[in-house]
Length: 599
Image 1: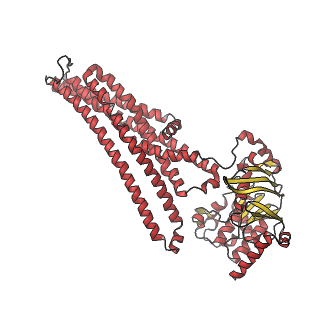
Image 2: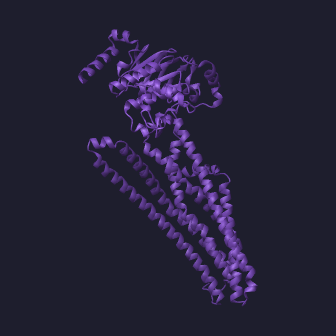
Image 3: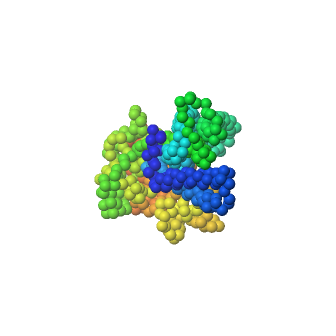
């Protein structure tokens, strides 16, 4: 299956791959001409006692062929690299786009290290297949046939030897390579597992240090690395064995032809039956044929040498196929089915006119594990809504469905009376701002991080958004201001500063619908106060949906949805639900008890 898939990607290389094959074929034809020139020169000098003037044209021809062959080989290398680069660039772009299509719901189930290994080494391993193996395979079918056509009229006995020994090389290449391919695939899986585990350990190094488990993880990584070393050596052992076998049969073929030619040139009888008519041969033809024999085996030997590139590519292709065959958990419709969204975005979807309705929405991550069960709720335009519940109640699923990362198993979500499944998700998300519990900041300047949602924002717009998010005073203290560099995941910043930068990003985006996932979690009182002030300002003139674990942040909500085991069991404002004595009132009592114990 992986080989079929690799062949299907061949058109991505364009004409560069074809040019590579023909340039290599041209180099083979030039090698024939070079061998003929050399044979004529040696025959004339040794047997005909020709002087330099007689062989000078042939010497100039021989000298001219050398740079021409060098240029042709250089061109073949360049076109081969271009072909492989085109495949790698296209596939990497396809994988990135597919990962974006799969969304966070899929990425949460995969190990980051394994995905990184596929995107980097996995795709890079395809280079050898398209740049070296495919041209070698094509050349192995073309050049030996051309050489046979040249050799057979000159010495059919040598041609018969070539015909009999040539099939042995690909035969043993396949026999030995089949065993190496299984081990190579096992090696690839071990490498992906090792990369994923190592990345997980690096990301959790602080926790491992605190619990004294770092030395144990070092031993585990050592064991995994040693297993990978052993499997690598097994693959290399078979690869070297394959090369040795190919060289052996090529050497045997060359030796047999050399013996047959030498016997006849010396006038010795070959050990053949009396009825076997041995063709005569002169020095010129014998030397020419003998120089062509290595060129005959060279494409076959090169094909065997590049078979390892094929094995590496098939192992990587298996992982790419698995990734590209993964289906997203949300609906993907063709552009022609989404014409309503343009009208929707341009005329109806202006702040704060977004209204959302869940109609009997159910979602199952897997059979028998419902995350949401028959959820029906109205979220009127311009309101401040809170979704509360214990861990595992379905809050994250509720948000992922609304963001379009998941599609309901049954039921539907309406945006201004239009089914979300029929809307273009990119256009829908342009009207959303999302502030997660742990905002993602990237290596770069503060300005670059703020401009993620508004790439064309000016410095004045950045300053205004930072002021509203209560982070402008901190940025002003930095030596380079908005050009100050921050580390990956906001390294060098406090939790409150990271959260306020995320809020500034939401202000800058100026979306009509803002989703907050417990923006005040894990903050000190001063940071929580500043963040809460920013949230109150952000809520003005917008629809605000707050996912809350701490109930103190939802008191100002116009409507509170209480989730439990995937169902909405209560809804109303804070005062109504607190007086009802239901699940929300119990959560308030538990929350207040936790605060007192913390004091």
